[in-house]
Length: 119
Image 1 (cartoon, helix red, strand yellow):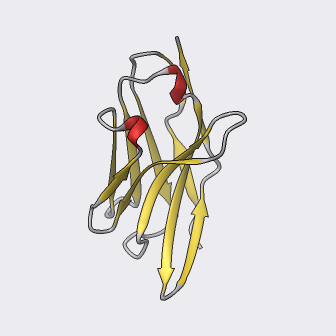
Image 2 (cartoon, helix red, strand yellow):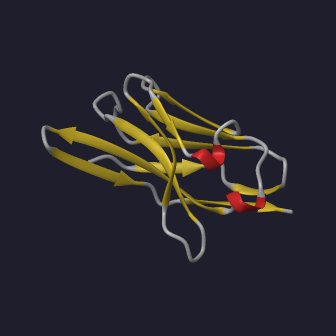
């Protein structure tokens, strides 16, 4: 098991920046992929960005060039730097961790943090 705690959400004007952090309750060295998802009202949860143990990343097209994901295995954290925010980025952002044991994958979620971008 691993608990994930997000921080850094809030209200920002369009064009502004926010930095989301996710702290894990134990070492993330064995966690294959860590990432961020978001869910806007009335919409499905979607992947924003994730990062594997080796550092390879996946970034949603809608945020490419604006958001950056990083992880610090020594500090057990994953961070999402969000720049040039748009009103359509408004959502609850969730930290996610996926840990594989052979063919079995355990997924863990944080409680979510609200990001609101005003126009």
